[in-house]
Length: 53
Image (cartoon, rainbow, N blue to C red; front, side):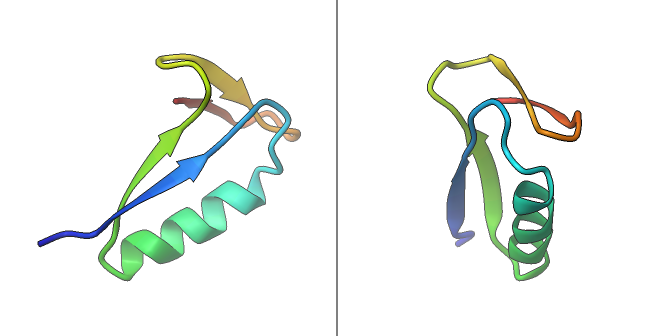
């Protein structure tokens, strides 16, 4: 059974604070899902990374 982890994002997130933990969790066998306060919205990080939540 795969364990799931939710990562909560909002606009102006620090890009590295998403990418590094997300990669580490996935390498450890976790399934990650990025979520936000609005479904199917695009959030933009401080350094321009765009993520659909």
